[in-house]
Image (cartoon, rainbow, N blue to C red):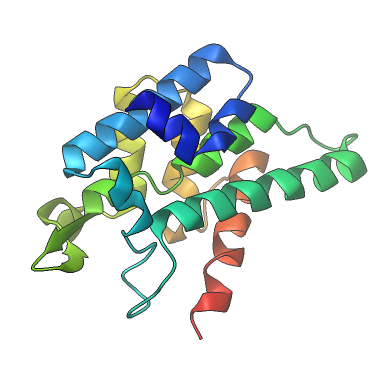
Length: 177
């Protein structure tokens, strides 16, 4: 299944740190197994339950956020390298994992996608951060996952977390209608 995931998410190959890439893949595979999903489900799962009948899949959203974050990070690094440094490995892994908790937050029931029992108690930033910690991903990645949504408002966000947060909302807000 690892090779299928690599085909589906070619952005994984942009992670240069071998251990980070390996742990990112392991986190994905574990989330899919724990959530009861198959690789093909990633194209069907909606990226959000907050937009009724959205046609945007979880997979499309994760890739769009990751690609938006990469492009933004390149521009920011070019113009602000004297002020801060961005890790492209953290940007890519953080983008790919920012919504990983949704694979535990959602379930398919009677042909519809709904909140799972886990999702009724934990929003995806919490379950995603737990998954990342379970796979011993760096604290920086756990931080990105935990703070990418409203749960991170009012607290510290690392420069990479700021990029992922805004990339996520750039790929959500215009679709709300």
